[in-house]
Image (cartoon, rainbow over all chains, first blue to last red; front, side, top):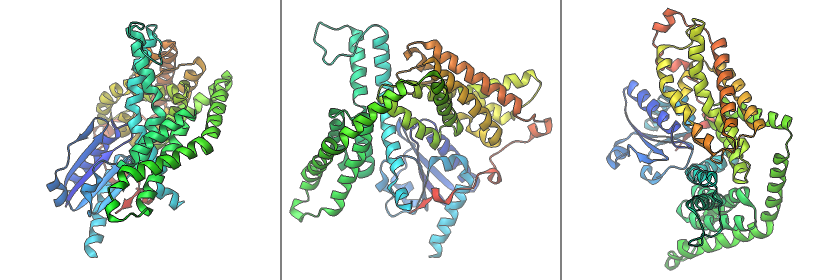
Amino acid sequence: MKIVGVAACTVGIAHTYIAQEKMENAGKKAGHEIAIETQGTIGTENELSSQQIQEADIVIMAADVKIAGRERFEGKRIIQVPTEVAVKSPNKLIKKAEEVLKQKQAQ
Amino acid sequence: MNKLRELNLKGHLLTAISYLIPIVCGAGFLIAIGMGFGGTSMDQLVPGEFSIWDALATMGGAGLGLLPVVIATGISYSIAGKPGIAPGFIIGLTANAIGAGFIGGILGGFLSGYLAISLIKYFKVPKWAKGLMPTLIIPFFTSLIGGLIMVYIIGAPIAAFTSLLTNALESLGSSSLLMFGGVVGLLSGIDYGGPINKTVFAFVLTLQAEGINGPITALQLVNTATPIGFGLAFFIAKVFRKNIYTPVETEALKSAVPMGFINIVEGVIPIVMNDIVRCLIATAVGGAAGGAVSMVLGADATVPFGGVLMLPTMTNPWTGVAALVVNILVTGFTLALIKKHKSEEELSLDTEDNEDDEEDIDLDDIKVM
């Protein structure tokens, strides 16, 4: 499946990027297409294109703070967790995303 | 409890703090450099009557004076979005004016944000007046109500509470300082920049905004020392012919230690995850020791971030150095001592991220929308 996401932590210099890396690695390992945007203190990097968002099956937000441009994900299935979860348990998080998507398809 | 979770008070506070930190760092360094060279922070810069150092100190002082306003605006924005910004500014400035300081700014921000968002939700206007909502109704009524509550109801008690708190902390004896520093150090080390650390950070940042620099210095010195301590443990263990890290972990250390020098503790997380209990003990013991030393000696950086860069902003930089050294040594030795020796066989196993090793996700942490 196709996953997009946003990572944003409080200070915006470390957790944000660790979360991004962990989620991307875990996503790729599980055979998904994944792109994570980072909203650090430096600003938004690796910004998601509207096409990426449109094509995505699910959105993962690993954030401790308010996310900029949240309206871009209007109508999408969104999973929101603290960055801590993405840092500590990225593989389980991706698995959870798979489950959520399955539930959605079953409905 | 669920209702409280939905309000997400902490998330709003953290959002505001994320806007605050760069301002405190920029202004903190300006005032530290300016005052270090004999400048003073002035109310007004009269042409011809100030030096460059006065100018720097004044710039920094002006920035730090804004903190209650920034925190109020940040919280209000986090709650209500763009319409929260204007009343956040006004109520934050009101908190400043009535002497309610940083704590006033925090409460004012929540007040402003929730007032604004309730107006958006419940105040219905006819179609022709839609344009008046964001331009007049929300900023005016939110500021009016929130500002008056700040001035006549919560402002004075907060100001009294703040001065009580600051007086109590300023008059702590050295044994209380030892305890306080130890606790701050312990709590800040214990989750490596995670939620506990950030909660303690919010508290000590409040104290710094009130002019008490000791606790935040202790916290950040611990954050700085922890990764360096992990690095030192590598060498101490080597002396005893003990391998405590896998090659992957050693590789992680190479970036974690330099990151530590500039106050980023998170680099050691991958190492900690592989051996949580032992790493936690070493970090906590070292952090408590470092925090205690920092508070007792009176290390007092004027900036809340920067690792070793904080040292020059202290009245006596050696106090910070002493705290760092103690913390690094204690963490390093403890870790080298209690971490298990890794045999050749274990070393050859690549410790790739494995799902089975991961912590279960707390379902309360997940929100699906």
